[in-house]
Length: 234
Image 1 (tube, rainbow, N blue to C red):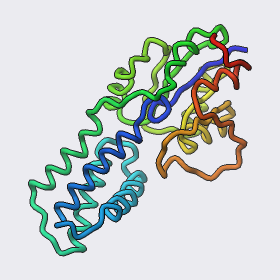
Image 2 (cartoon, rainbow, N blue to C red; image 1 turned 120 degrees about the horizontal axis):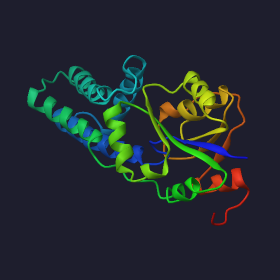
Image 3 (cartoon, rainbow, N blue to C red; image 1 turned 90 degrees about the vertical axis):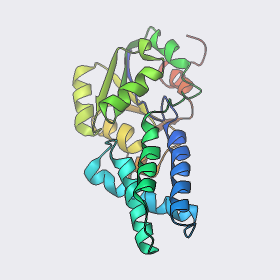
Image 4 (tube, helix red, strand yellow; image 1 turned 90 degrees about the horizontal axis):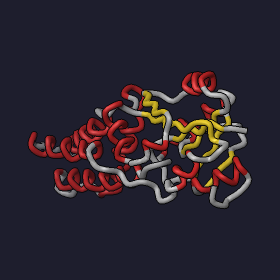
């Protein structure tokens, strides 16, 4: 049986959450300084996370959401503490938040297996399916150095059941591989596809209630065992 393997990008192939957490630390420190250290770092992060998650409802995964969430966090906490924030500090925070879209995000340590999978006799095609804005995600895809092993790259502003129904029509035997239950696994299963959940560093948004039986792995290397029944070199 030949498979069409579909890989998520962020946190499946690259270490996006680690990069975001580092940026969150930097932004939270700047906010604390702007607030004359009247608010604890963890409280700043908690407020930011609540605002950021709420903004997804209206702003989705646009690159404007993350900096705007930090702007809203600073504004809310400054108002609570009766503090005036200079426009210079606001601009500094915006600039710092936006650097997350410019940094080179490292590969996951197990992505060496991608080349082997692309050459496997039972792999019909290899696809990257990633959520976000085209310019940001295109940059991240190219910086992986893995593009030559993939037949297709799809960048979308949503990953829902309709996304996977379309892929199910285009591909003969698709298998979705990703870290997000919400974006990668549950909608793929709802669309009748096979899906493999890789356990990675993740964030709150990726969690979702479901009734599916999920196949989970801890490394991309385990794909060989699940699909081809072996862990030896291909």
